[in-house]
Length: 381
Image 1 (cartoon, rainbow, N blue to C red):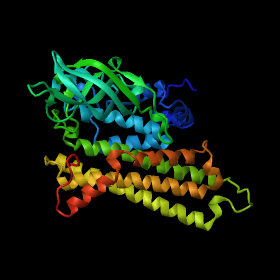
Image 2 (cartoon, one colour):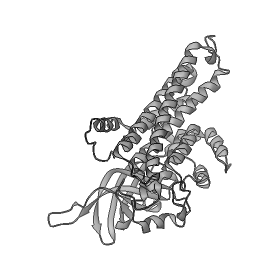
Image 3 (tube, helix red, strand yellow):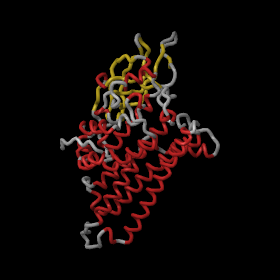
Image 4 (cartoon, rainbow, N blue to C red):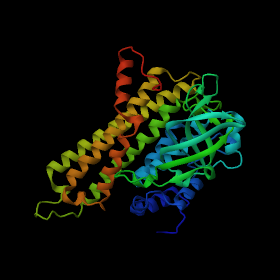
């Protein structure tokens, strides 16, 4: 393991690319890389300038995550949770400022499902339970867990509104290292366990709820953005697969004595098709972002149709990224089946991206319903 601390983006990308197998083997991104993310502004990118942030646009942040994901999918996935300020903006403003005022590089990770019953007690809401898929929790200092608040009544405990996330210091939770998967293994998406921690109510919020911050980024659709920062990881991974095949083509000799990869007409044509597919999916993905952002700059809300385009283009980008990575592996021949092959890792990681609930088939159902003038399911917009 290297001990370098690269302070430029290109230096960090070189370091990440060289250490991808390390992250996959240990099942989390190494702490020094998280520290490098902090120095480069990954976690303050979307934060308001008044709190020490950079106030980037949605496009700027997605482009950064895509670039990191090209170096390593797991690193890009973990970096994508630098979008946390847009989630946490649903907290009361005083709580939001407490989280970031003294440390704009605060790292947040969350385990949302399943929302656990949480009774009101003196001082707040008592949180207990276990949650899965807390990506990046190994490097986080603040955690969020899904709860379903319960209010005591004569009839017993009853639901007290929509499910929420309870925010608490990492020290108040236990990380159980359960992450044993084939793709995105380096994300450290372990389980969180909390036992009878009382969280003040003003440290809870409805996920995807209305933002209480005023800057432009906080008027962007939160759940759509949460899907986009994950989908763009798939675009970066697919680009990495293409570039690795091109690198191989220069000197890779088939054991059968066949022409090198770059000299095979079928491989040339297939590579070009994959290039076209990836660039097309990427263009629509960013065009949907630009249209939504332009509306916000004009003072208009992002429309339901624009939000649907954000969700659909994200799902399409993720699926296309996985299809491209798989096709590139086929073109690479036997060299691409070894676990140590960068292309094989790209396939594992790109397939894992498509499995996320934000990018599943339900996106197509909801976008299709809206295309027919029907209402989508709750949570889509």
